[in-house]
Image 1 (spheres, rainbow, N blue to C red):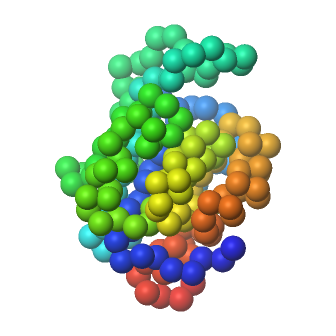
Image 2 (image 1 turned 180 degrees about the horizontal axis):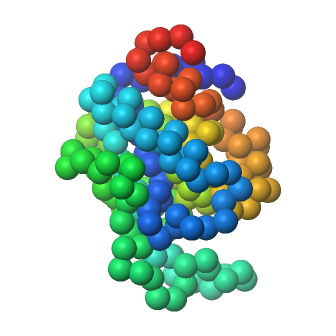
Length: 188
């Protein structure tokens, strides 16, 4: 689906762009993903719209068949946001221990208390943190928009499956520039 609109009260959710995951073998160049996410952050700041920086500090409990990527000791700066994001005091920070940012946090309440009706998502990993957060946002009643050039995954099949099969069922998808054009009232 093509992008149609950005609601007057839209929040940007930047998922897991943190030091602890920076060196993963992503399928798209992480520098490009960061640059696109930063463009969105800049545009949202100019518009005075909420920015939510999300980091992951652990994993949900329970057994899994595949080993977890971040089991074991983590560096002291694992959860630190990338400096390029230019974390500001006005940014909402959400630390999660699950794939999605809504399941074990008060993010839904914070956004609804501010009157947010739409979220734009960027970050990593497409098939886990971004997709889980998008699913939870959709289930919570938010309009969902996904910035496809501002996300990547370590698994190409997960990235492509989410983009082709899941995201169109949860909301609208487009490039960061298309989102910025709608946000600022310019044509893409």
